[in-house]
Length: 98
Image (cartoon, rainbow, N blue to C red; front, side, top):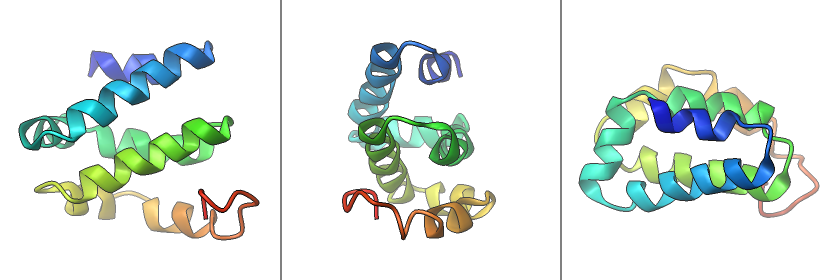
């Protein structure tokens, strides 16, 4: 998925724009299905560990929540180490991340 390259950029603003694209696309039923079918869930699960900017991590979690509601999103999530990574955030200092 070429758009996923945006969220791997070194420039924070470019990553933010990439996450915003996924949030906007994921709010539409067909867009949500497109993101799930094109393998975005495992990429975002990896971003739970990789994303250092707290406000962008919140966006990652929001996108994951959107995709979990889509058809096949839960199955895709359960095939990743997502639950363990989310459990690791339960002690996070930021209440929005907890």
